[in-house]
Amino acid sequence: MLASAAVVPPGNVFANIEPQEIELGTIDLANNGIRVDGIYFYENINKGPDFMSFDTLTRSLFRVIANHYPILVGRPTVNSKGKASIVVNPDDLCIPDVKEVSVDQPAETFFLHGSKSKAGPKTNVKFFDLHRFYSTSGVERIPHATYHRNHSSVIVRILRFKDSSYTALAYSLLHGIFDATATVAFMSHWAEYARNLANPNYKLSFLPIHSRNVMYDRFGEIEPVELPFVKHFKDAAGTAKFDSPDNVAPILLSTPDIPQIAEQHLLHISAENLERMRQEVDDTQTTAMVLTAVLTRAMVEANTVAFGVEPHTSYVAVAYDSRQRSGVPQNFAGNASFICIAPLSTKRVVGSSYKELAQTIKESSMKTDSAYSKASIEIIENELGLLYHASLSLCNSPQSSYLGFSNVRYLPFKAIDFGYGSPSILAFDYFSKEGMCRMYPNFQDNGVDLFINYTDVCFSHLRKNEMMAKY
Image (cartoon, rainbow, N blue to C red; front, side):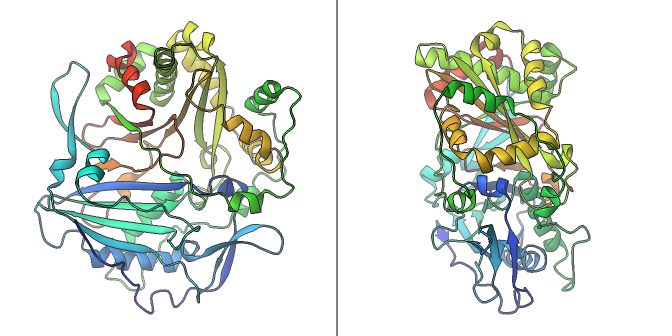
């Protein structure tokens, strides 16, 4: 493995960045210490030597940041009003950390080939084996994008494999700046700049909005609702009291980086089997909702075998994007994603049909409009102690089962085309919490890849689950 030195931006690329301050929102702060990342594989069909050149990628990255994303080179602070913000000082920029890494093994060394089902024939669908890559390639794990050490808020590694069959683009960004929608938009804008690099005056036509006011003003006159999961945890706490600070900004801004959890697993389901599952469970529901129901019960059953006791409560957390449900602009480039948590009794989970369970989860997760989003913000600002107490229950243990489901299947990953085609294989490196699951598209067979963070022991029982094994 050979890594280049971090590239230094040309002297004039950030020259026109103006001093500015962008106040962060409560949801940004709630995600501080977490990173968003990806590893995208681009197939070099002709094995050309100039495929996704380092010069093209770095120059376009610096240009798109300078012209449209200066927030990424700013630094965090708590301002005189007690608000957390990113200050962009042209004399003290947080420079992106970009390196090119030569891997002295072919890309195929790190691919697994799956099958359509447990008993199905082998297919040509490839999956990146993250464990094998980091344990055998000699490549250092991508650093955690952070403000807490002398690192950067933008970390990029361009991976060149020995046979030149693929180039992989690996990146790490801060969840305190972007949610998944904003991350994919930024990556798409970077790719758009790469495709138009010959035009030194190129600018985006659909500009990202960084001001958090566009979201918080949207919720201004709305009356918040009572969140069912908050009542659940208050009832569980009884007479216990939880202290919360008057101003959460300094507390949340100082949140330490959340370390990576290593036990990541991948479940692949083909498009054919996805539809078969949906038809069998409930053809009126979305694929994501059916999958959530199937996984919820499968994890309860796996936990029961692993721990030798049935958990009392099953928590199902479903992420939703308020850009879709609350009128927040689609080009808002911050955190507009919220989580709806459904506390379900285990008896209800295992005693219901999959159709009934999917309907129950849907009823809990679809009432997520602007009033729900505003209530979530106010809970973070006023009930931080209770939320911390609640987070301790969101795990897989003898007492509880936990699934945090995030569907990023329909984000425009294909738009991340740097002029050499769209990525053919998607992977990622990081989970912040055990029990989380992300659903990615698989472009090879139009199925889905479920990246799930689950202990090895529990996952071994999940794979043997009768319903999961069918697909």
